[in-house]
Length: 255
Image (cartoon, rainbow, N blue to C red):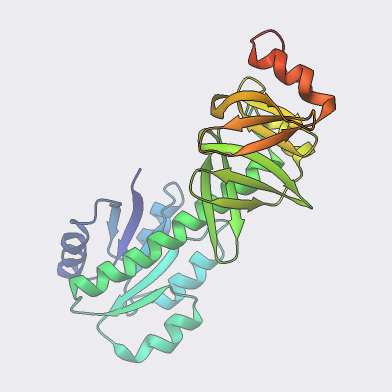
């Protein structure tokens, strides 16, 4: 689904120019074009948007006043000012605008601003999903995790996770090419994982069933599960019988 943008400018040719400049951007859709702040407010009452492209100098109500209104919304859109007047730049950034573009708008410059906005919106969407994942989990088992780290968030499909291992107050998510730290405990996470897909082999370790090549006995009388990719993981005495039965298709694993 495309991100939505509202164009607010009192000059018709300026609105047309912005719409045409946005046309090549497949991830953006123009929701509406408004000739005034008042008409934009009316539109936004029933049509929230992701970003507002806003002129500064307009009759009756300026873009800066409109920005103050937007900032009070429950979910305020991002704001990019597009104006012929350079002198309002400081005021625009005081209004927490994402960017400030001088008209006549350079298409490349506009595209840079929209790319920056898209990154922020995608991160915001991931953050919202991450919060909901723990505060209001969807019914059924999880199919993905939102993993937060310094300066970024990653969406991880559980189908790509080979095994999960406790690491203090975190778990390590082991994928084929990388390992990610996710802030939760294994005890908490296992409640949301499908036991037909993940198998507990140790109090500290869950493995993905379709990643397991076999159960092997070691010379020291211990057992390991061999995973695709060449990794072997220990199977504790508590779990080895249940693991053996599960791999033979006889019983679910002990949690």
